[in-house]
Image 1 (cartoon, rainbow, N blue to C red):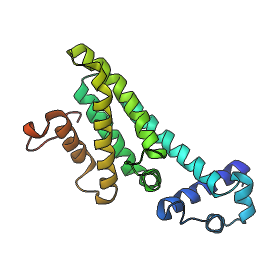
Image 2: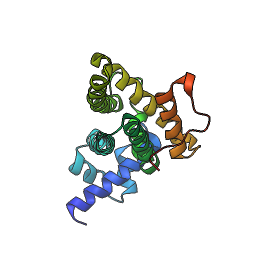
Image 3: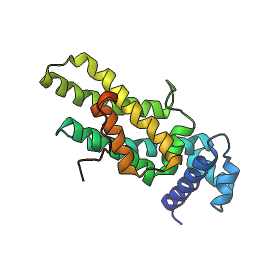
Image 4: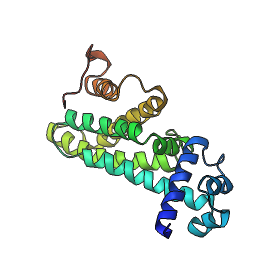
Length: 197
C-alpha cells in the first residue's frame, strides 16, 4: 500500500469510528487495530488522534460547504430555498457518518465549533443572495443576515433530527421546510411538494 493509500485507509477507518463513537470515545489504538496497522503508523501520518480528527472534520466541512454553496445560484428565491434544503438533506442522506461527526461534537446551538462555523459560512452565502433579493424587492437589506441565519438554522436543526428519523423521505422533508419558510405558519399548504421535480 502506498503512503497515500495508507493515509486514505486511516482516514476512512477514523471517520467511521468518529461517527460511531465520537472524538472522546475513539482511540488511536482502535483506529490502528481496525486498519490492521501499528499505532506508530497512525502517529506517523497524523501526529495523533487530534490530527486525524482535524483532517476528517476539514474534509467533511468542505464537502458540505461546497455542496450547499453550489446550489445557491440565482433564480427565483423559492427555487434557491428548495435547492439549499435538498442539498443539506442530500448530504445527510448520502454522508450520514460525516454529518454525524460534524454535529456530534459541536452542536448547532453552540457558538463555537466546526458545525456552527460551517453554518455561519453557509449563512454568509445565503445572506449575500438574500441581500440582493431584498434590494430588488424594496426590503431592508440589513435584515438579510437575520433571515439567512433563520433559514440555515431551520434546515440544519431539521437535518439533525432527520439524521436518525429518516421519515418522511428527503424531498418531502425539504418540501415541508420550504413550505414553512416560504408560506409562514399562517399560509401553510396542506400537501407541500417541491416544484423542482
